[in-house]
Length: 380
Image (tube, rainbow, N blue to C red; front, side):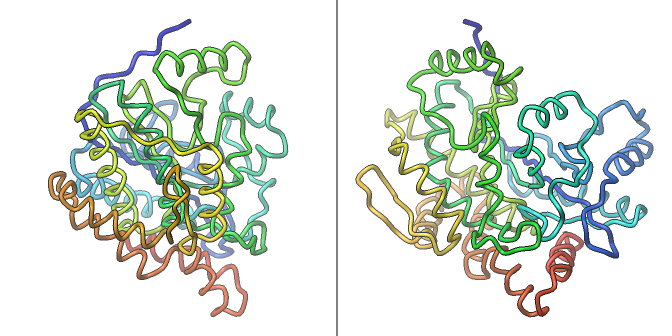
């Protein structure tokens, strides 16, 4: 069995990945011009077109780019780097007649008509997954948090899954799919889990058990590389991080900062607990599945299962108590203001709610939903 090395990383350092769609300025429909925009960015950076831009990357679809940060110790610094790069991207996108849009899904674009980026691994994914793969017109936000010890990776993966419904409810922004209301707060979360090696991670008692699982997936051809495991939370051995991938796309930088702060605080708190000899609770498998479904369906109105005993609470009430509990950790990490953004998000409403309100106020106009999202992206 091949050993999986876990890279050296400083505890609780962070990095953020923000998937952003490109929409036509006139029609508000998706626009597959990512390659043109990336090439202009590379020209301006003095890079050849076959080189990779350091902060703006291609994604599965040609209507999508991903803005990534470097490694930071504070949420404020990560957010500022995102702000700088999104402003740069906004300017270049304007030269191509497109705007930036970020939500879990586009409200009316035809999913199966979106061209796929010309890369072997994407072509293989679509060939293998067929209809489901062609539906993946979805966007998310991912947060990496550094771990100083490999033995923390799997317990903290379990720990973050305990908060899956919290992150899903806060970020839910995909109520519409192909021009109709799905009745869900997050269609994206349920759509994405249809891919092989996606969805809720398995529980592993040891790193060697995780290595054996990866080896089996490689041997049976489910994946060609460990990076193709696309769980909602996953260890990332090459970076020495745990990656929280639960969230729908988010159009407010303040909301991204709040979600990043909550992730960083939870991971740091769990790390301290492990160091003190405590074990991270593991929820029963069906509770994990049920919590994800409840948050995807009901968003901020979800009543979630808190523990193995089956105690329940409204997700927003639990979030308020967790923000209060984590306040000393946030102060230690320098993200107190950003963590309070969770409360502001709850009081304002999640984006799935804003989308439905906009749609109703505009008399059933999906274009208005996109334009309202675009306005927030321009305000970054």
